[in-house]
Image (cartoon, rainbow, N blue to C red):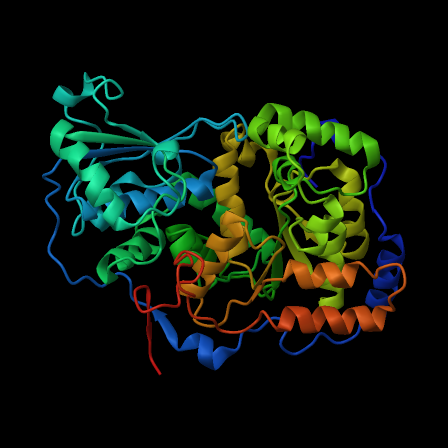
Length: 495
């Protein structure tokens, strides 16, 4: 099952209070009942009425003559992706030239990857040339400037989250006009989703869905991953050409003589790495040993959160759980899939396999679904070696494996990877790429009765809770266009 948290691999299995439910699930799966008809489907007619159109433009190229924008984006690959597209919009707004963004090294992610290690620079520049001017580095005359000394460095502390365009025009543009350059450091979620002018919002979508393409070596390895997930059959999925470029076609050519039927697969993003677990302030059945380990992790990686926990009365772990604020555990996730009706022989691709709790937490998953795999199972050590120690590049493989799946199940609606994947599937999926988006608050009320609830009742309540989220939703006001691209700026409605 690939990597696991080194500090936790020797722990006993942590099934919490779910041993009874897991036994009931095993019995239900052994009956091999027919899957519900809508399990692998979206509401086709309303979903397919939305088609991609953010590549359309209604303006002239921007000369970028006011100055230059530098961005050093923090977080992991998905947070950085959002920061890049927000920076593109700010460059257009301020008639400034964007320098290819840099990625900040993080003690959590421990990845030295830069933009060109993950995305195709040439494609990024060419795709957005009709919108903004992009260069690879500052002019030499500006490189020698002490940007902090002249007041050109702007950190996340200097501006609120989701700042409006008026903030940039009032506070950032004067810096650029005066010093010819501004450097944003961090830039996490520092541009609002509303109110934003129509064409700027469309540019945001164009950047995310059209301008950012993974580099060939990521595409090639991801192409192999998809081929093996589908059982080596010659099949190109609806999103393959957007995700792996020519390497999807290459797989088809090599498999033309194969008569083997392609296998459907479900992708499951388990957001249960130690950083997520520690940051949630929840408890997961590991007792005092778990509490000490997570507290120590917070002291190192989230010192502000650790201080807040020690000085402020915060909601208890049980209160957090009842409000749906805790990540689903691997046990809860697999119980959800069993209750929804996925058969025991379902092919399941698990992203985010570096689970807190180690191999013991995977026992529940593999005991119920033996055809459960990760990229570490499907790719050889030689194939993965170029990506070793590059968590963002490995996350790109997970992104592609999830986005191309026949069905995708997220376990944390706040996860950037899940949000971006679900948005990508909406944008390019043509109404045929279903995503399971559990409401964790509703699920929490169901799981709280795990010691007494009958499997039939659990199944009914779980299906109802998930079915209520499986509707075609247009983007709510102020919500992310990356997650909810069904809006007039990103997609066009045909009926």
